[in-house]
Image 1 (cartoon, rainbow, N blue to C red):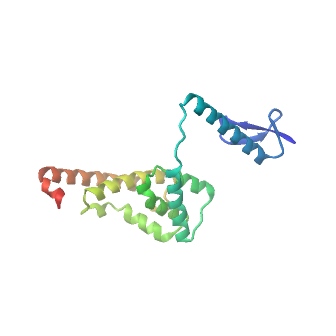
Image 2 (cartoon, rainbow, N blue to C red):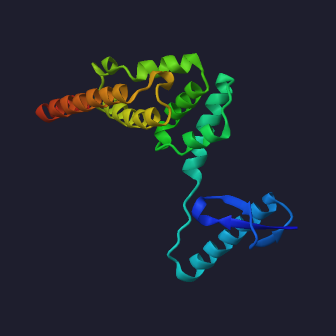
Image 3 (cartoon, helix red, strand yellow):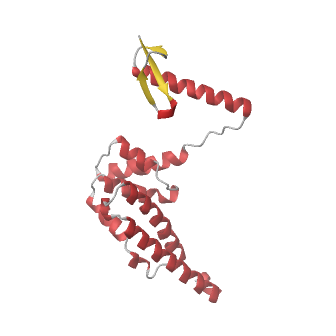
Length: 187
């Protein structure tokens, strides 16, 4: 038996130490540390009530989008890339874009072509208000993606910013038109 030390200050690092739990291996040490952390959190939650457990449903939606897209493209990604993509600032409406990004990271050429179309500000020339707002949300996600995966799929911060600028301009034009002639909203 070895002693293991779980260092909360360094994330989930578990290492051998002279002072610590007597456990047979590193996996047992991780399991014991996570169990102890969960027990402490539940104890504080039940007594003080200040701790709230966050739903994992949004995370599962993003994971499904990534997994389904990779399966469809017959591609794979490493765990670190999947985890990074699943942690993206994407709501449920953005799950299809997240799937496209995952496939692009995995090297799927058709999805890289789709990203080229999404990044093209000219597609907003005849866009309605909802489509322009959606493009602005997509641009925000694409800026995050460009920081995480520079140049992958042709996504750059500059192209994402250009899309966001075009989307904002289109939203302003559509809102002005709606204010000037409220009946346009009914069409």
